[in-house]
Length: 370
Ligand code: PEP
Ligand code: MN
Image (tube, rainbow, N blue to C red; front, side):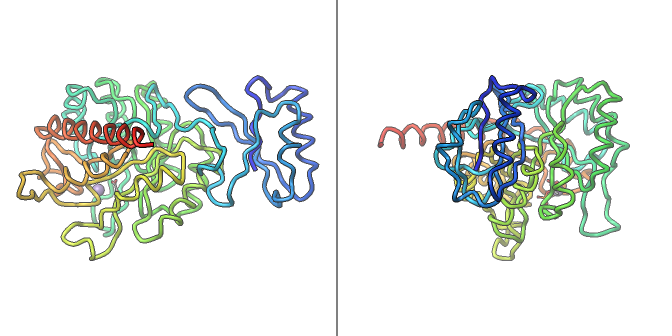
């Protein structure tokens, strides 16, 4: 059960203190306080954990300082979409709004290769009106002898160039909590010219200690990838770990499932789950067509499978696209075979817009039927 505190009740006030005291003495329940920073306002939510079935929701709702009471299903307490749940969804970070009704493209380098490549990428993004990108500094690799990413050494120039070219949010994978500290330090040292969305990779979806530590910090939003070999329910529970630790600025990313049934693609594209995740949770949903499809093979219509998969996800309502580009794919240190070129960037962006407009028309048509 979630008790939503009236926005005009300050946390230190007498009303708040008596409310918390009242809730704390309820039998067999524990309280956990969450502050939720939405686009419009910051809300305080008090979660009642334990045996809540026998509690009288109407009596709790009648207490001074209570705005509303929401009964939640057992699963996905924080990230879930519950009946009678009209809590604001989405968040704003560094001036960019993320929610279930808009679309952002994060085109960029799977792995940072050279400073020159980072600059060419960001310059092209600015030229085409983009404020977001992806830049891999810490790469989890299958083979221990493969390039592991430049790590903290590349952060100073990545952040400085992002500031120079007006990039507001960089999706960057972290595989250990020390990476968050390194990112923090480098951003501070550079004077915070940009922002970072911390990415949890598919290999770490169920790394619960990493999830807990990343969920405990509230500075950076989080992009969590679906685990490539676990059920959707397991991945959403992993996502709940982040939120239950206090950070609900989360985007959930579909990136394909690991199975030979997806051949000749690298993974089996799972973008039919976009509307499912939007229905089960209040999270914006991202798709990663590059890691799903993994090749740039063209079909008979001169459109590559990566473009097709992207359009399929967007036309189903995806809110974010994480996609690999590289100024010189042959010189890429990771995943060059799936990287689109800068010359293809305006084409890709326009193709995304076509799919998004088609999605909006489909929503309008559906609404006109009811
Ligand atoms: C990535 O986005 O760079 C990546 C490694 O993706 P995934 O975790 O989905 O394999
Ligand atoms: Mn990759």
